[in-house]
Image (cartoon, rainbow, N blue to C red; front, side, top):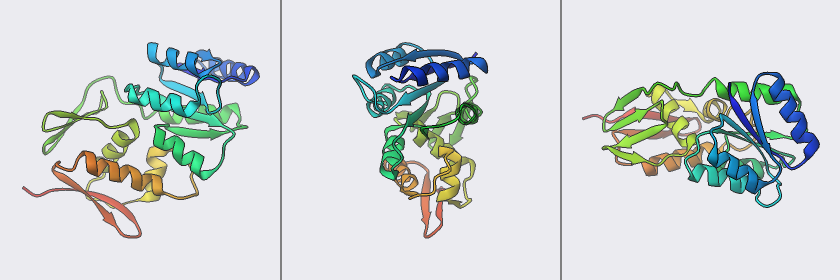
Length: 224
């Protein structure tokens, strides 16, 4: 049974989310403030953590940053009434996997969770070799010349997507829809930011991520 953590200070919303998720088979824990929620998230294993932005004691954005800095691989979904483009980008930059704007329906939330759950890696470790890189798709780890590279969950997923589509040009919209699973109509700079970070972290690797002006990106294996 998949475990979900809800961090939400409004009791009526928290209880409704808990009831809806339990009714479709999830095991659910909950917390009413940021500090208690972070403690639960760090001391237990959850497939999904739902985090309100505006929380007492510790805000949702800080929780996401703390979880990612502690290498927590859970699916992190920000739930908030904030709907400005800058807020959405900031949330993704912090390490969120998705962003749901209040009010939302139980079916919408369940659909988002299921979509992310389908993309969780197998518990069986599968090693992919690529020149001087090795990628453990089960453990979300990338090694460059046998040294572990520190990638966020989103950076890892983006890198793996580029590898799986090597030598094929991917548009920013394709990448956004595949990796962020978010029907986002605004600026696609979030893709450019993550590509920039990947290039810096993997600059001595045996591949390049080339920009195709006006379209997107393509990963190419370097010739020996």
